Length: 241
Image (cartoon, rainbow, N blue to C red; front, side, top):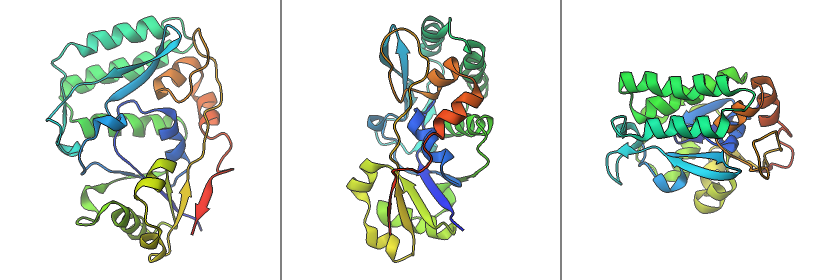
């Protein structure tokens, strides 16, 4: 039997391709013991405001070299009020605004009271949203897994230790850091995600693909969202052995 492993760093209110990859996997390994990389968008929330994509950044404490599992969200700063205002302005007339508000704003307010870490904030939101969308896979933290290996070999070893048959990754990552020998030595294959977000109803302006999950749940039901995120299955995804 196939056992597909996806390894992803925590992300605040992730974009749709993030959910598509996890929902096509059996296990999501939360890669939370590596350096936070703001350039790849872990703290960025892409929303559609006034017909255009707008990236809202959540401030995170800890400097430029902080590890993800040591990072803290700056709850004391004024971004929360601005974020609430942005959501109301962008999605106030959307059909599922109540779902959006409870999933995002009430969630933020709760974690602000708890002073939750960056990892906990991201992991709990993503896991709960995955469950609402019907995914029943396993969530594992990388903190207690393989250490002292470079990126490609570590990923291959994590998949191997979790008895996975396939690693599900993205095209850029495959090109930039994957060494197939690390995977072949462990009899692990690689599936490279190749998914284009289907169009769904949005606010005014041209359709913008791959926004935050928040845009999707504001505009369609959770059942419709699940169907969209699983659309196409693995058709067209390259497999490397």
